Length: 67
Figure 1 (cartoon, rainbow, N blue to C red):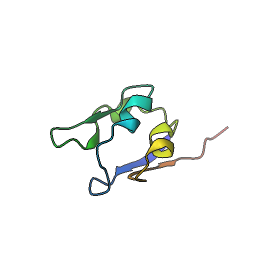
Figure 2 (figure 1 turned 135 degrees about the vertical axis):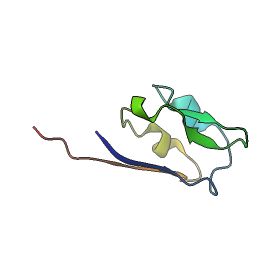
Figure 3 (figure 1 turned 90 degrees about the vertical axis):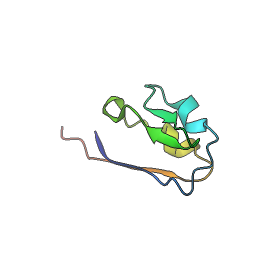
């Protein structure tokens, strides 16, 4: 479960890698060419966006799962 999600817009150069690797199409590039979360409720916390971002502009925290 996703606890927090943050895109540091000042670090984003708009390369679109995060958008391409997001399996649930949570991310898109906005009118300024910066990554933005357009469907955050669909996020499965796979962390592909954060892992692939060359600018380290995306961070997320995942809540511990209760078993």
